[in-house]
Length: 189
Image 1: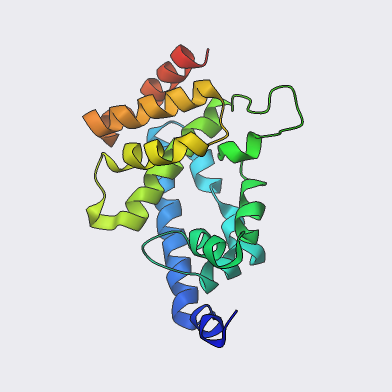
Image 2: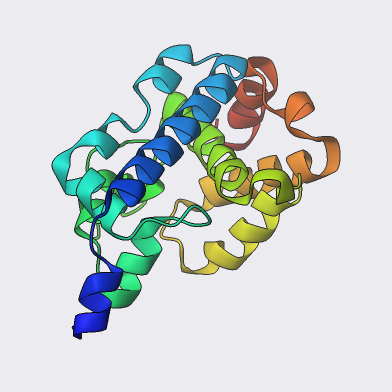
C-alpha cells in the first residue's frame, strides 16, 4: 500500500465518531422495524458485534457515511476481517447459514432471523441513502445482488416478494408481524 493510501485509511477521531454514529443510527432503525415486525428482542440485540474491536476498528478505518466500510476494505485488501467476523456471529445474514460441505448448503433460516434480515437490509438502505432512500431502493439493490447470493431458493423468492411488496405498498403496510409471518408460512412452510 502506498503512503497516500495509508494516510487515506488512517483512523481519525472524526472517522471513529462518524462510524459510531452510523452504527448507532442503523441499529436504532433496525430496532424500530423489528418492533413493527414483532421481534423486538432481535432488534435490541441486532449487530452488537459491530462494537467489537475486529469490526469497529476496521469500520472506523474505512468509514464513509454513504456506504458500508466493508465494501471499501474489500476493494483495498481483497477481503474484510470485519465481514468475516460479522457474518459468522449474526444469524440474520444468509451467509451465516451457508455451508458448502453439507447436503443442504443453503438451509432455510428460522423466521425470527429472516424477519431481522429484512429489517436490517431496509434499515441499511435508509441509513446510507438518507433522504434519497425510496421504497424501491431495496428491491433494486437485491435484484443486483441476488444472482451471486448463496441463499436457499425459497428465501430468495420470499425476499424478492417482500422487497417487491415494499416497493409497491411501502414499509408501513408490509413490515408488520402478521404480514411477514403469513408470507413466511406461505412461501417457506
